Length: 396
Ligand code: AMP
Image (cartoon, rainbow, N blue to C red):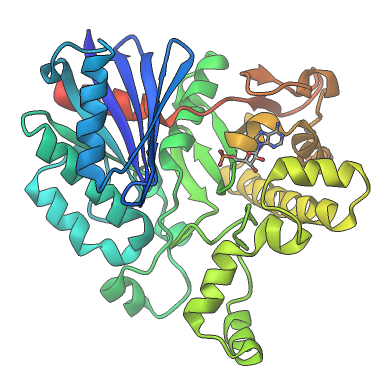
């Protein structure tokens, strides 16, 4: 048995899970928040119980040290040597890192050279990797990349119709994100269907605060809705999804704002929040719309229409689909939103079973027996995917 740590480092947070591999059993999980601020919060879950501590944690290295000491204090491990690998979620590998890999000095340099492509996430990801390297110098660090699964897209799917030089010199292309989730969910769906991934075509709808749709043809991503950045695609909690790019300059002039300010609005004040004027949280919108709030319903409907646009397009692109799968916060929990989407797909023969659909956070078939496409809810598990790849790369 091996203990593997799966890590997701944000700018002021560090989420972790310790897994017993290859059994894929969760030993413990937790999060450090407000790193670098006053009153940082350290939380670890043990046997279903939350243990919390508030204390100033100056940086990610301190957070990692505290985490490891806690693991010893709580007798989860008896020495640091028990951790045989640390897997990091990394948002971007660009064209250069196309699969999970061991992170050495060379990979760190590569990631630093592409930081421009996703600074918001890549900088904290690198900080997390460096912190673990510093505190656990003898333990192998593995990077698992959100973009990697989508590296199988064809040129016609990943290139934008802009001057080719933008791609050649500046790496402007569709990368796609949530790859680890799309991969996990599509592989799990194949297992449920008792098929090999190569035998089926699946559309994965990862709908959480961030959201993307992925066309998985015979086990490989052939298209996905997020693009050069996670802003493209369907509307999300606070992101607009795709819009006419000419709106940016028009609104810069109208509001006398910089392109940076407008982009910030498209990232942080649009989507569910922008349309409803109420909340970015799907629970609030589902509740408000059930009480007749028009703009809450509109925010949900705009998203549902766009999701259906992608599903229809991927159905045609892949030449048919065996299953449509919902995952992430909204996909796993919001039954009315799933029903709203599937009801729009009647022309493809997809049919929801409302009773089966009345579920939350469980793996389940939710389509009717006479549905031409099977529809599932499959809870995502990016950490298991990270731990699997870390195990593979550190134990061979
Ligand atoms: P994620 O980013 O995957 O954590 O998903 C977050 C989203 O899931 C938020 O919009 C939540 O409101 C939504 N969510 C979680 N539970 C429910 C629920 N019971 N009903 C509707 N939406 C939910």
